[in-house]
Image 1 (cartoon, helix red, strand yellow):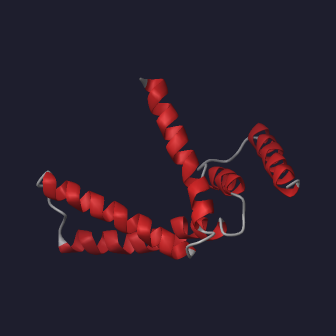
Image 2 (tube, helix red, strand yellow):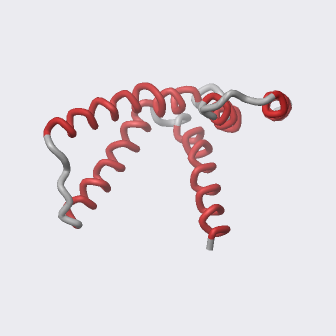
Length: 126
């Protein structure tokens, strides 16, 4: 069961970058992000209604709205915007390194350089 869970996460999470890359060829990047957030918000609101959970106080809703706008315009929006010009594999690797949260060891830096070089080589060979 654990292997199945990891496989699902691997496939769903990994395919996100690919589908963003496909979508930005036809749809403006920020509109893609807006669609994702609207759909996720509607699903979560529906869940709250079905389970009779509260949606929060007005202050919590304001904080969530500000956080959502920052994510749309900053984090997620930047990733979607970058995929307009960069290969999805490169964006995924760069995000993995940038947001690792810790200082990288020499071995990790070496591995990153090899992986990044491989991705660049593959994409320039096209």
